Length: 521
Image (cartoon, rainbow, N blue to C red; front, side):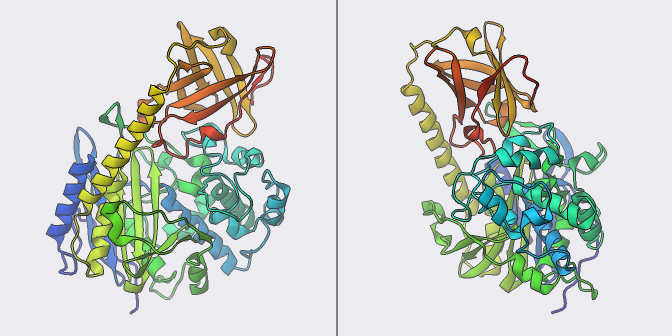
């Protein structure tokens, strides 16, 4: 069947109430998910055979404000941006300007990893499939939470991020190599990543809601506010820009726009008007498995859809779902999470955007849609994911309690509090300052305004950083090690809760004190 990009619509409800997907049933599932997971607003798009069959907004953009979510409401799509970056490189391959197996160091001057062998052998496709040897989320603290680093500075400091495994030996999700991919696009095309995305994707697909930066949104725009729990209470947040690592996750978009993108992906790059975004050959390459993902035993509530294989391609995950190929990716920002999932054999795609951090909401809605098109028995996915979320939260709280139970609360720091103050330096992040505040200590990351807070003594020479921004949910231990003469040799950090997002890669920092007169880094 010949597919086409759908005409632009302006309705705020389902585009076509087809018997293919009973609208009232889907509405009930979405509202159940909103209530169960405390999500203010959700937007959903469903496409089938090149047509949009559902396009609808639910709830509100911001708590306390009645403005509704519509099909044109803009959300941050985070890592769902990655397939745009990969597809941009595919276009350059189509044009003969590069090859997937070109060495990155030959095409991107200044590219360097911490291991010379990896620097020499890294190929362009390796930037996109999470097998570089970097640890999980390695280097993410350079851009998350929002920092003052430029993208060029992040690319330079990549050479100081230590590897966690050998090259191509294991899967570990990273973000900063997509920043390198964006620099490569600029180097080869002569256009910035943002210019390339706007001209080569947004324009031909008529994605007029979409932007390459949240900073391009003004106060009058139909845009959600992010939301997160702070001390158990949901509150709205300010948007956190990702401009310094835009190729990994900066796109903001609507379900109306993303429905067009999903149709183009399912149509292997064809626009239905005789034109293409990229060749069918490149479409196959973009969805070719490159890195094997580990498959854990599912929670009992999710056992019915146990995957038998799971792989990462270039900006997409491929696995089996009820005997069919599922191509999907999720995106996570502070206060917003999303999913884009496709069943290529059935020519079906679903997009779910939310303005809260609860994965169970988008996952339960997406599974409901996929099950419908697979003629699977109806399942209450909302209740299933709610049970999984509850158990994981309880397990994390138990871990924190057990750590507290082992704490020697009577112990004292080895040194006076003033002796812990000073500037500490990590080779890839840079400087962190410990200083006195009132009668205690405080910590601040010099490149990350949002990472500042008080230090509470925990035991011996370990303190806990309690961040002033309680919505981060990322409090961290900091442990100081001493030299034989009693001076501080280094400090190491580690997240307190196992639920802390992996992008808070505190554990990768090796902080060593530097002299007061040392220039900032």
